Image (tube, rainbow, N blue to C red; front, side, top):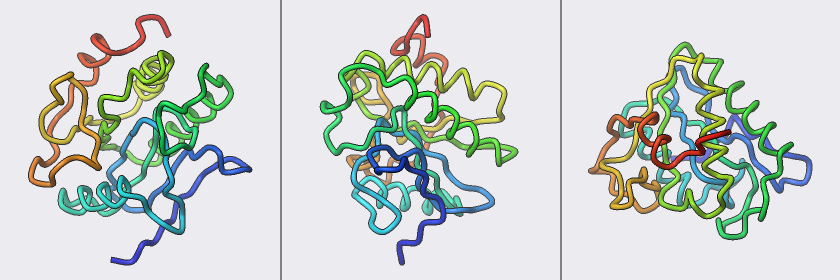
Length: 179
């Protein structure tokens, strides 16, 4: 299948990516930890897997979003401290993309690396709060990991399928208590 991207929102120097995807009437929205190397010209392993998960679950597109917009293939190289303006732009972009649809299916896909930086759970909590007025259904790949996190797509088998995800319970356990 040809790689064709309709949505590519990044900052001026491409050190941050806010959204990458394809337009559809029923796209699968995916929230990962942070963007890696995929762009509008070439996918990475995560985007390839997401495209396939979306297709197998009968979605007609996908939009990749992230808890934190800084691009790096190594989550442990994320900013040591939260870049507030980058985070605020990310939240704004997420709400903007989701608001275009009457209903959104969101795949939680950040894996166990949520704890790589203390501020990432704060980002999740604030993104969830910003989404509360929207009509969303949360999904995950198969069961949660042993550590209780939604699976990262690049390491998940397609046979696991997409299953309901209780984001409120997850945030009570892993999210920031005071955003």
